[in-house]
Image (cartoon, rainbow, N blue to C red; front, side, top):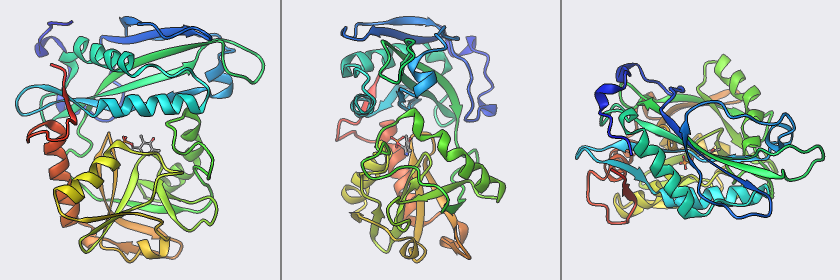
Length: 344
Ligand SMILES: *Cc1c(COP(=O)(O)O)cnc(C)c1O
């Protein structure tokens, strides 16, 4: 474990954004098909050698996770529900025939990376250490089949607060040219192949002045699914509604927000299909995901209409959910659900 103090790492915490800043080390373990996973080790952060015939490079056989380590107000380093990331990582792996990494090995790898790079974790409220577990078919092959060997990597990067001036509403547009996932497809897996296909629609929406786009269901092009890397919620009165699991990525932030909304804020929660026309009549809208936590949505454009939620300001329910989630996920309030894992 590293004993280097924060002073030894030369990072301007104020300048951090959501971009890659190399850290000291990463965890690497490998497995040949037919073997069982065994522990890997920490290596200096850097490039990994790979055959050009690697399964991930040719056939996209790879999955990942996204989580973060934070300093809380008590000065501890905490993870939020890392066991759920471990389970989801295993399910994603099984969806592309990669032997899943056992949960205990996953959790140990994440903790080792956090502890060895502890001085790269920003001060409380200035950002976090974003952690990226990756599992790829790294062995080379020619035919279209599962790779002969796999590599499990955990790397990390300090990132700044998504919003330097607190919560700032974004504008979204509804994508009608592309569906990110389909029934019985891969939408529920954090699978490498789900992301680059969204780039044309994401870039087009950015060029038109929107932060991201909302994808609709593949069958009827009518029901809201999610944004390309975040789940979506709407508020109507004292009701919180969000699309059901199935084609969407089962976000851990999504799950926590549903629980906090009903158990702490007394809201009624509904996981159900939300017609795009209905969405335009609701009171508040926000997106959720590990990186940004909660992103308020101030405007949504759909065809010729544009709806403005809460005068393009942060809605009152969105604000309460954000505050409650922050306090709970940092362990600033009593952790009654066993969600917070203190690693240092
Ligand atoms: C990771 C991800 C999310 C958010 O999941 P969290 O567990 O809350 O970070 C939402 N949608 C997609 C497509 C994702 O990849």
